[in-house]
Amino acid sequence: MFSIQFLLVQWRTTENLLNLTRLNMRYACQYVLYIYFPFIGKVIFFYMFFLHKNILAIEAEKKENKIHTHT
Image (cartoon, rainbow, N blue to C red):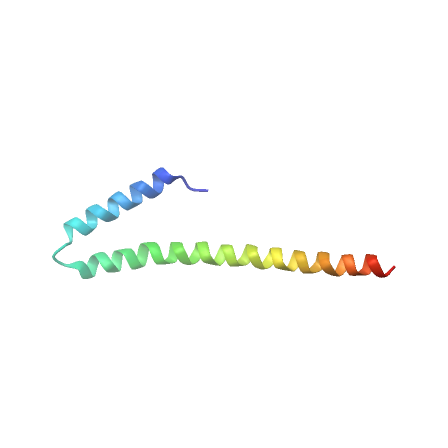
């Protein structure tokens, strides 16, 4: 997926930006909101999506097991 090094670089750039814009924090907050929130949202979405698929698979398996036990 993505490496820790990439995240560290991202954090460094964010930190530098925060240091540069200590006087006007509003722009730094906007930067963080626009860059990181969609990323976090995507991660949560994919996590939920795969979790949902797994739950459906488990449910299907349970039904299959019930059918096998009855016959």
